Amino acid sequence: MNLPKKLTIQLKSREETNSLRKLKTPSSLVDFSSNDYLGFAKSEAIFKQTHQFLVDKDIKQNGATGSRLLSGNHLLYDDVETFLSEFHQSESTTIFNSGYDANIGFFSSIPQRGDIILYDEFIHASIRDGIKLSNAKAFKFLHNDVEDLEKKLLHFIDKNEVFRQAQNDRERHSELDSESHQTIYVATESVFSMDGDSPDLEKMSHIIKKHNAFFIVDEAHAVGVFREGLIQKLNLQNEIFARIITFGKAMGCHGAAILGSKQLQQYLVNFARSFIYTTGLSPHSLATILTSYQQLVITSENEKSQKQKLQQNIHHFLKEVKRLNLSFIPSCSAVHCCIVSGNKNVKSISEKLHQKGFDVKAILSPTVPEGKERLRFCLHSYNSTIEISDVLELMRIFV
Image 1 (cartoon, one colour):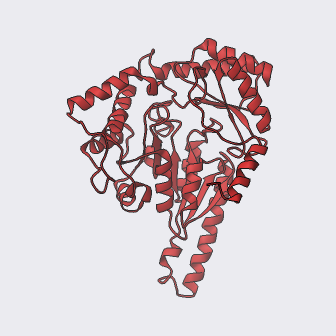
Image 2 (spheres, rainbow, N blue to C red; image 1 turned 90 degrees about the vertical axis):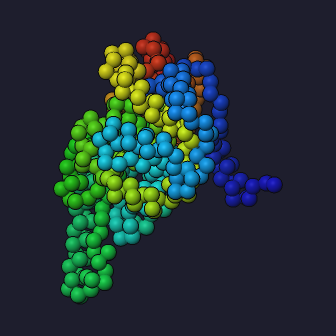
Image 3 (cartoon, helix red, strand yellow; image 1 turned 90 degrees about the horizontal axis):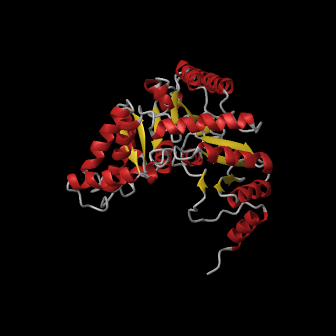
């Protein structure tokens, strides 16, 4: 049966703008595209250790058998969530099936009607989708712009004070108590996936605390790359209402978690629909999360560790970009982007790099704004300095 006409028109539009997405099988090219920053997804040691862990625990179960509120909350959940709470210095950890599920569950259930969500204009699509499902009103602030954030905070705080005073004057404050206690949530990422840059988290945290708002930070692309993540590196963990961490990037496995208070966990378990109405992760998935974290803990201080190699490669990449006078968005993370305007142009350069043996992905509009299309380089512990220098030499020729 053919697609409805409206859907066919949308697909045709994507083809005409060179933005039609297609599934591709993994290639044997030099990897500058995956999120496997530390090489954990390819680690034979982690694979074997996970298997042995399950054998030692006599766990022979393939699936969770149900949602966590029914039959799927097997014993490994408690072990892994306890470990993660200690590692990330959080009162509680609530594991979700993916980063998308975590963000959908959080933003659709936590902010209430009458509340305000302020979010960075470049926030991840999963947070945007969660916000769409929320009853709160949402407004964006300029990317990494702390002054614009404070301006908007003050606007809604002043507006709320006027509203409260009007209710008091009319002696209706008891009837509209929930409306008069408006909560403001501020959402950002510690490392942005499409730019690789970071906000001034310390300054942002100070301003948000000063105005009694609640701070939410997505650390998907920071955990592992910066060991525990940027929040703990800056010692801000006690200032953050909720941290979203994922295991599908540097940790090389699958799943995600929300870090916060025990009350937050209790609320999510009761109201986050993406948590309640889905089958839990398998024991093998949880065992892999635990093993990957243990690998990070064991090797992180070793000069030959994956984390150290990654940091050395980031340093080399930045040095080569400067030497070759290339224009990249400033970043100290594992993600580095070069703006190449136009879907056709950026796809052409990506294909030329593929032909030379390098897997560098073109990020197209509408994933990023039109005119801001880009080549996205993801650096890894297993990339060599020669590979980095060679691909950047080609960039100088092609861009």
